[in-house]
Length: 157
Image 1 (tube, rainbow, N blue to C red):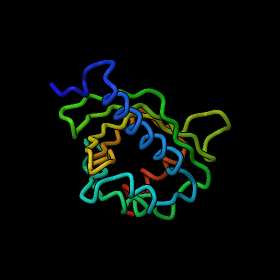
Image 2: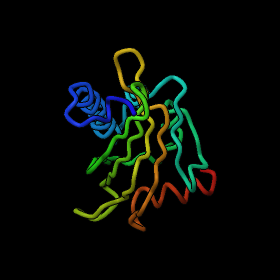
Image 3: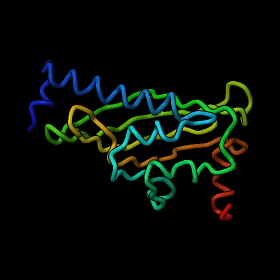
């Protein structure tokens, strides 16, 4: 077991804080008119961003803009709720997070979509970065951005 799994360890506290900064930064960047170049910097050079049924769709984070395509929501905000990290070594952590998103395409105060991120973080130099993100959608408003984008994606648009 890595020392990073020991509660109360200063190294663990620092690592958790650094991972939380990446999670929070992703949430603040993944919005309307997203800065895709800045988002890609949160990931390793060989990272995979997977989504869809069973993670069947896999792209490099720099290609996420192509997934959003012409259908990027004018207003979208991602919110991180709860997360947990398990360190499998001094340089790798498995992180499970829960999130929800609101957009301009659902009624005011209604969630557009929600789910989980299953991430593998790795330490590269002085930074923790995402090496693999699996997006698990657990629900979506039927008239929301994600539902519409999913239909368009299925139709090849």
